[in-house]
Image (cartoon, rainbow, N blue to C red; front, top):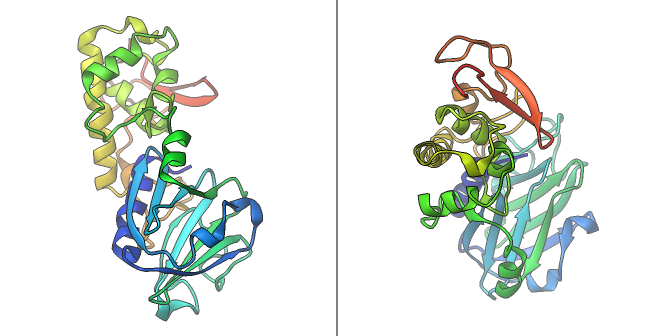
Length: 290
């Protein structure tokens, strides 16, 4: 699943490509992938983009919003008008199908097709059909995101806010960090590595972490997210999560402990351990994180 840095990368690149262009056609190939009235989309201009956590919002000239969630296998593919014969000159992002480099579009996993006034095309592909695009009003968007916590890159994500959220629960700190109702967009990669930087055991009760460690942890979450954005996000070991320009993110080469089970700790050399917390793989150094 793409995390905040990957979705932010998608946002920034789509802003460059389709802002100011009008949606002239919408083809819905899989009904469950599009929620809302398509008539409220066709003929509308893309005005701007916003993002909250892992959700991308595309704002239209009639004040409607296309809320996009890629979920596990969602994929967005942008093809300029000159590239409809294939993907070679296009831009693509998400989890490509294995045959995407040889398949002409639409492919068998294409669910939605948006055509724009400059004759470019945006494909929404999703192998497992968990992702979706919803049409919402501004009030509906606010309501749908009312229980989502503050985004890690939001100025309101202060040390005071962070501390207050931790002090309300005795759940393991790793589980709390992944609670999207508290911290929007903080995913498993960054929770693992932030805890390593702050030298906190992922099983430690959130409410009893000392203030100096909370300060380091808060700073680490922000720094890691920004670092990953600069690296273009990260991709899985199969290199199947791609940038909009067809390249892969490189943050996977900068993981501290995430997915490094049995490898030596970068600080002390002890083997990195793995356990499950809240159903998620958790990586840590038992020597450094006490």
